[in-house]
Length: 196
Image (cartoon, rainbow, N blue to C red; front, side, top):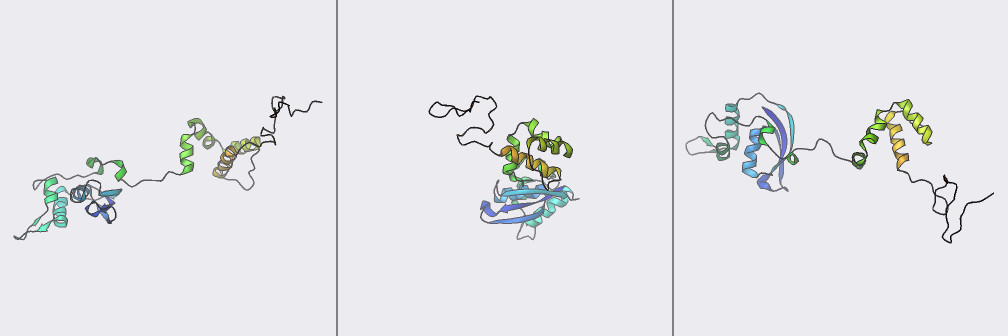
């Protein structure tokens, strides 16, 4: 049977939460009946525990039950979910069919990761797939300074940073390098091209 950690909003109040450790899927189901469907969140699987259905039912009845006048313990939430003395309880978190937003995020997205996700997939993997020597050659070709950068991740970072920079502009707002040889037109219609 799986186990994990979770946060429980008592009575569904998100301002009043308590952590629960080593909870089973069956216990999460009981907590959701008691406190509300969205009251159990940030669920994180931590491993497994060796416990039978009957042992888990007895434990849940003891933990979430109320003492009756006859000395027995009764747990209405447990009985409603798992009726009968030999009822089968949830053994895995997948059986609960919970929305994935109730589980603890594995990692957080960063702006860099978001930008990488919007890139063309061929570009994303292009630099990562290259060797350090290939990256150094590419940096030399692009005129990227790699002073003090020896690790692959550092070189990739320098190349990506160089790709983000704006191209240099001349005083008229045009590119410094005029590849077509015509020159740029000024606002008054004259050209800034010097003819020899």
